[in-house]
Image 1 (tube, rainbow, N blue to C red):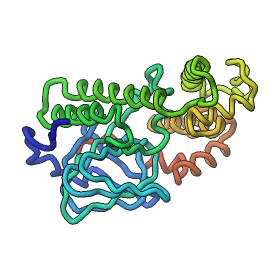
Image 2: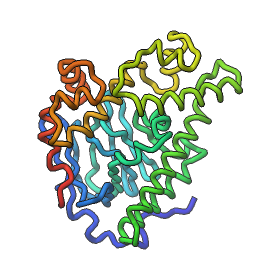
Image 3: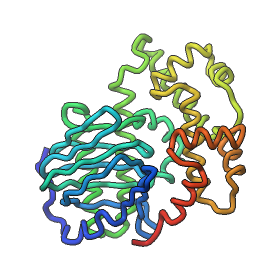
Length: 311
């Protein structure tokens, strides 16, 4: 792999706004102010600034280039060193610790538009927890992932024409590589014969797409299992293998994600959002939302009113 780090790009103002566009609220949600009409933010950070436990709706990728950088998730700690790539899914609580000196690139993406593409729901299985990508953990795709991020970085800082379109096309490529690697390298349905593994993967990809399109409707575990010819017990076991979540937990997470988007619309009441997100009652919606986001839907709406401000 070529040793390409920070050359051939002008970073003289790359961290002028750090950490001003990242604000952590008392309830641990971080607000990221993307530039007007943009859905990506990349900066070269060389400051000794730590972040207490927080979460945000943006997908974050951290890529150290000089010295270490620490990331903490519940009981898990990642000591990142140059060459490591940490992918943090949206909504994941984490904290960050910087050394006295060092440089790292930080990428933030609003993936709302991409998440609506058919097939993206299946890729979510590969992104249900933080991923530390390096030559040891992801040997088959590491070089590709690394150079995709370098291309994104260069497009962003060189202000190339159509830079954001190019960056998001590269991001889709990154997602596809992660998803394909997950299906190929993780022992999904390992107890089944190869032809059955492929059949199960296709069936569960279809289930994920169905959930993504019908999460607002009232459907049950039994009905979903029967739709692909499984008993609910067999389906539940395979679904947990495929996604890392129980069926009910996954449905709740998908509905909360939909509610987050709807809460940005001031024309909808909280009750209307609960119903459109698939929750049977406002009390259930409030309870589940607070459990996952550590704030009420009303508080979330108020904090995010100015999330896409010019900075």
